[in-house]
Image (cartoon, rainbow, N blue to C red; front, side, top):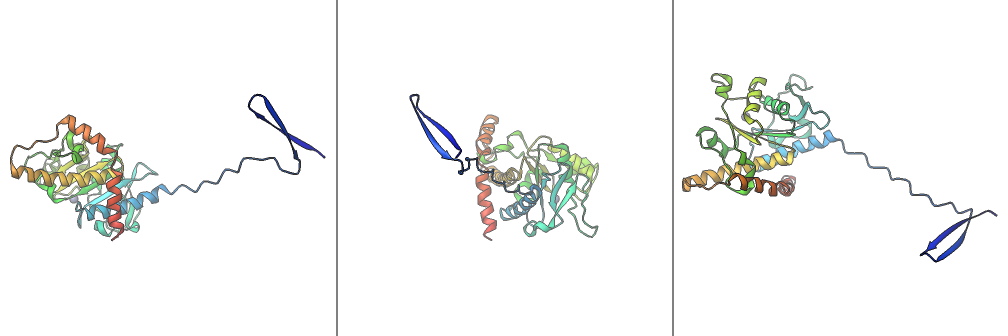
Length: 274
Ligand SMILES: [Zn+2]
């Protein structure tokens, strides 16, 4: 009978010899468990577009108007956004792949957002941006029309510390318009006004807010609106408002930056429970 021998050394001095019958198979490492298939990145992004629409509606950033998009994780020259629809009503079936010229594979009968060029041209100009919100949230509007700068007056909106530019469509179009960013040229002009900032106001219209991902874009949208509301209150109480200075804004942005998944989970729960 053939035997194999296993020698086990215990410490330096002792060695033991075991005899193992050849009928017992030698132990082999367990076969590597098959990894579950990676979730389809585009499907996940579409699901995020849907919940972001619902969260922004629930938090009062968008109403029947406004839109949110995510850059297509499978193709940086495309983005995912609903067809023309009220944000609160958006479902996965409404989300269409748009290219950076604003085209979709949907039949011509499907109505698209007129202002899809806001998203297309910002994605083209800003490779760091992977999610965009366009809104008409009410507290922002006065800051687009009075010359009073929107500035961070508390830590939650510290990301506004670098300033918030105001896009004036009349200057970009060299004349009066219906106020909508309905062409690639106007989208480009808005993207230029935005520059490297996280947000830009649009005179007599609303704002555009961007993020490296959907959680950051939603976080910034909620707190830009809240900051504007609080700033109007502070200015009504007195003209000597103390804002975060540049260093405070930088430090506060760094510390809140790592926690944005916390409100996201809360906002998500609120829309899931509805
Ligand atoms: Zn709009």
